[in-house]
Length: 96
Image (cartoon, rainbow, N blue to C red; front, top):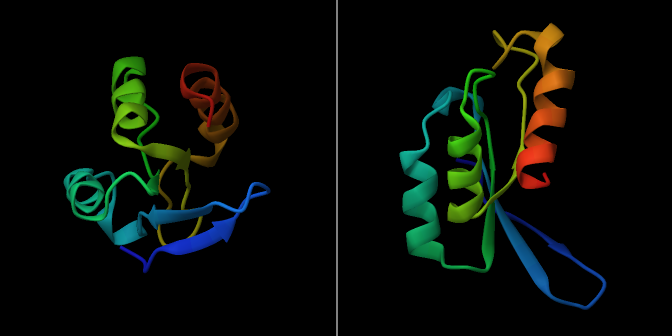
């Protein structure tokens, strides 16, 4: 897991992100543990497989995940030909 990054948003709140690294592949337990330790001021950025169910996408959203990332180097997290469809599907289901 990368050190959390923070950004400022227009109403001057600070948002911190816990970003999944490629060596964690599609594992999610570390992210859940980080949310428990860090609290609701953090959101997550994770990798998911193309085959993930809509229910699991929504479960990730409930836990605090707000973005999806793809590793296109070092073996890649998913086949590039699937990424556009997958990104649109996740956005439709969870808004990220």
